Length: 505
Image (cartoon, rainbow, N blue to C red; front, side, top):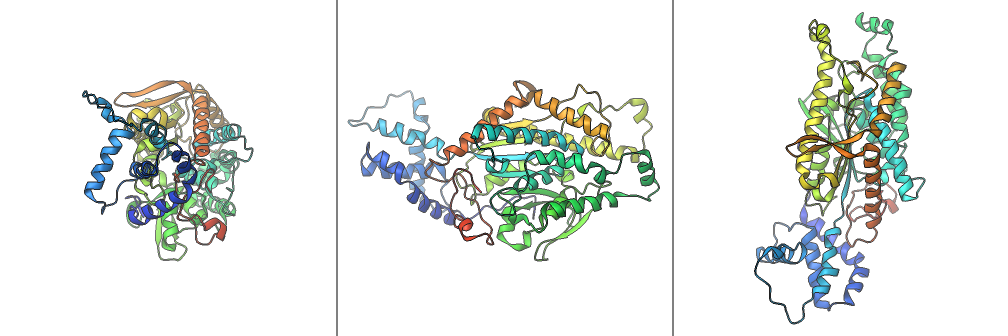
């Protein structure tokens, strides 16, 4: 668990040494191929240039060496020298073929770190749940693996509120190899448990709440029971990939991120997974706040819902990757990322009639105000992230969001209404959303409707995810170098400090 300052950068020297050792071990085949076209001296230059391109120099790198590598990068790797109007004299024996065939492929050697982010919300979680189910189906089809799961293709996952529960479901594991739940289980979790979590939705139940004979305690007890049944003794360490799940700590009056990376560092940041889920979904007025402590009892937190602190955790996930050089050593910018961000729907045409709301008191405004605030914050993050990606927005960043519905206006209590009619409406909205044209945030230009539908966008993304993970088998260096839990079996911890290929654990 950490304040929202994100992960501290890991020491560069240890990582560089281990990566160099790994490249030496795994680069045999590539070096042999290059040797047929170049001398041993040329191979040494190529290897050095590869390391310089994929990793920033450490602080104690000799300044002159760094300047030399920078010149080599701009001259040979990225073709900046082509902008110079002066013609370059041709050398007697130009190694053009070697540069084009060997160094030209360096751009693809770093690969892309794949990030999944799910917004916070309540019953509207059915919408991203349906998108996850469709994406997993597409991944099975395109990879040819009927057992493929979301966790096989994403390197990092972040989720707030019900989105945090979904990430725990998709990445939590009892055996350190396969996730507990399928993507289809996410939205079905809400439909099956809605009435137990939010009450029956009847007028008698509402009257009980008003008379304080019933409160959020009944839903809290149900949430606690369901989370315990789902995750039992698992902790943050028992997740397959890096996870980020936020809450708001009332003790320190600051947002906190539960982080797998921190949990693997010390038990003081390792929390039981069911309690993490309970904390991130502790929405005020719906579920009770919760006091939780780390597995060693040294760290405590009084938590309320993560959606209040971070309704759209996409920016937090991106920042985590960019600053976590130990697990993502070769990421240099957003061009090295492939991000899927799933929204909860932009208010879904909620109707606020003036004649009615003009009579509202503070009590009536509490739920709608929270809904408007959360959705507005999520949309702001989407705009900021799209601006950060700039020219590579369409190829590296995908936002799936329901934008209105032909099913008519929704009630302001859409997130807490467990009635059959609301559930049926949300399932219909989710299915309609997949058919809608994808909407992109445009740099300094608001929104625009894409030519592709959300169905087609997810199909395209599934192809990119499968292709990225197939390419990892042939790369010299690992795209990711995940930390592993110390209590896993020996065969699953032997790659703790080195990269994993193809389908990472």
